[in-house]
Amino acid sequence: MKLSASKILVSMMLLALSGCGIVETFVEAFQEMSNQTEEVCTAIEHEIGSRPMIGWQIQNGVLSEVNVYFDNLADENITLAEIKEVVKDSIDNCMEKQPKKLLITINVTD
Image (cartoon, rainbow, N blue to C red; front, top):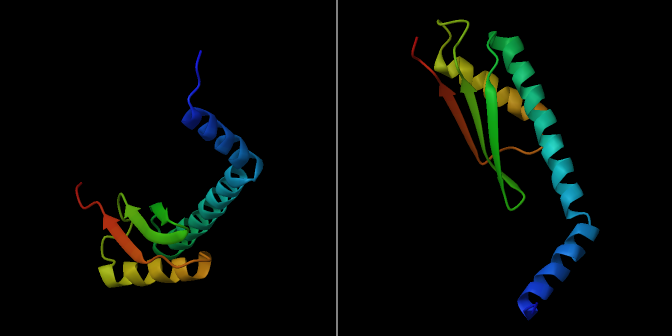
């Protein structure tokens, strides 16, 4: 079996990367972000009575987007401005990095 130079080079790079802790760093960052989003969910639920789901996106080490999704709201009389304020305050207080973009999604179907 003949190995090409590019396959050997890629194999060597993969071995080098596994030894320098990139995977461990990624797992730690993922766990830290998951813990922070859990804190945000708890804070929001405490304030408005509805627990959201949160998704986030990191690009090149920068928190580019956070999406806060409410499947239903316990208080149907709460205003969008009130939700926005609670979400922003919770993110400010619970997350180390602030997102470049914050999306709030509310399911309005019954």
